[in-house]
Length: 478
Image (cartoon, rainbow, N blue to C red; front, top):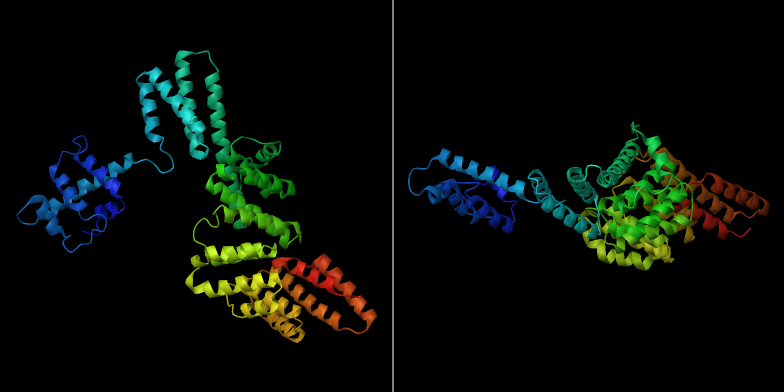
């Protein structure tokens, strides 16, 4: 009996729910079959595991029906009845997203019965409760619209010429509508970009024109979605900073999902400005976003993936806050998957030591790392090249560059954009070594100026490689 749909359903019931379900089963309004009640009393003794040796259909049958020959169909019929009662019981359990369903049903019944005074009093009381709720999510907007609509219906009976009710109803519907409209626009834009497909997003040009005129709502999550749409489609710096300011000021009042999306996309913008534009300001911007997530305990929306763990360490360390990076390791290293624990810890320690200037120990740590992911393998090799160069191991650096180039050409997962950027970086590293070893001053000067020009105009900054080259070039005395 352990694998029946009834038992699988009851296994999900909490202790409190099982006690409430007993009252439900015993209520003659829902059930008049005493054998179903007896079955419930037998089953609750085995809740929640339902796996004891005595838990058999024969034993349950005897407990319910007494002595007599076991009848499969009799036990099956009352099991089916109890299962149907459990399903009816769940219909009365409050939705985790909103507990408003019961109150709204009551409001509608009062209106239908023309008990308008009671109806209005309950609606006004609920509206006041809603206003006092600091976290006004999408459920609040919908519930508030339903209440405004109820008041409007009653207003038509009491004051047929009044327009205040319809205005309030429209305003509440607008808030509900604009919230979900912008939520869907964000989702559609994201899906289109992630999957590299063109999606016909209805009225997007008109909506963007509307959004550019200024704030479309006072609702914190709606505004976050507004600034997200503008940032995604316009890619203007002003929208990033507007969204960031709004995010920090209203974080506690925003839907968790909207806050997560805002953070994710803002950091994506920072990453683009860092990787493709080489804008050093966004080292700090990314750091502030990740620090806020860490201190707000919003490091992840689910499991902590080891690439995300590594990313936090890099963001904190390259901004100069290795103390925070070490604290992050202390707080979150236990959540790393066992098979990538050593790799993640060695990379994290190598990166921190690298940023602190302890190059020899950083090299020891990074030599122990062997990530399975291609994108992380590349970062390991880049760091090895950088460390060997800065330690003055020029022959080892040349050897690493040569093997790195060969492996990169064979790598099918990495895009050509990344490959070309990294190959350009590797050529520049070799060029810097050649310049440092060059004895002919004119040749040295010519090669140096050529290198500066190439790094300035052609080198992208994936994984900070352009910044590193600029810093190494600045160290060369001509």
